[in-house]
Amino acid sequence: MGREDFKNSSILIKDIMTKVIISVNVETTVFQVAKMMENGGIGAVLVKKNNHIIGIITDRDYATKIVSHNLSSDTPVEKIMSSPLITINFDESILDAAQRMTSKKIRKLAVTDNGKIIGLVTSTDLVAQFCK
Image (cartoon, rainbow, N blue to C red; front, top):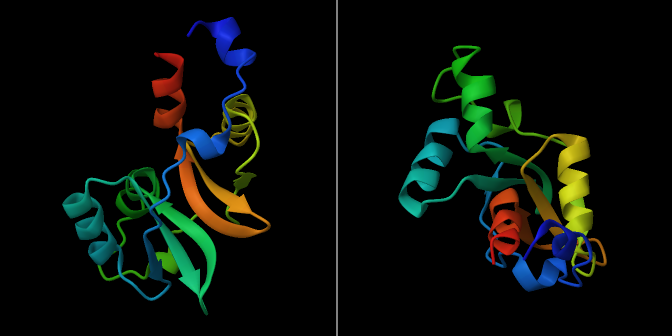
């Protein structure tokens, strides 16, 4: 798939998104989430409050927020999560996702269906499609 093919692609978010949603409560510590990421080989965990997903914590948050501010490992994820959560609808194109990630300077988007979060799409997912 070349650059023009990517731009003209009819591939939708639902075709490439990860459907497994891993979330934690706002009180979960950054240490607990780091262990989850390490053990699961994942780069992001969604954060919820009162059973509503309100943010995301990513591997990048560790470098830019925890380490640079010398926060303790018992800091609640609510203190460093990225919020509000930036989303994309499941029936939008991969080009829409690439443009949103670029404009917002992020690498992960929550995928929604009628406002409900149903998965994640990452810049790695987009690169994998570009390389096919």
